[in-house]
Length: 207
Image (tube, rainbow, N blue to C red):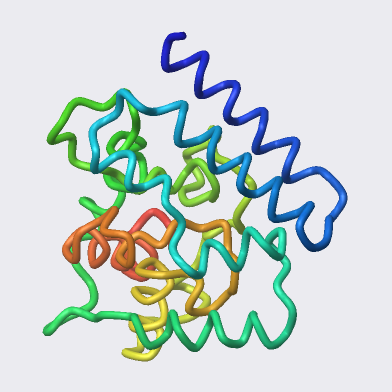
């Protein structure tokens, strides 16, 4: 079976699992185990480092178990653990917004079909409205138009913005936003450039 067909079947399994009514005990564990097995068997031809991405870390397991809606205690524990794991640059939190715009527009990298060595982008427009001139944007996440104009560029706001890009679950447990820094999707400079995109007064975000 070709990789695209396999991926379609896996996504169908995940969709059914995610839309099903919450189940308890061994039945839910069995469903999770079957889903994990389907994922693992679908990408046996992928490089080892890609296959490793199919293995959930502890936070992902907690969010899957709670179907994305953790209880208060679990949600609090997730935020605390992810806050503790945040890492900030040694100097400066804002880079070049022009590079940040390119990163936000780029949807390549870390995909099954990408060539080795492809530099990942953020694919931010898939979920957010960022510039007024871009009409092909997603709506899963909130609009970011005027982000810096509304919040300013204080050190606290820079730190929050960089931290949210680095690991959104440090602020919103089980957030759908990728943990770009925590999972090594984007490097430090890329995240600094995205921070500048959101905060720099000259950025199209703030026009």
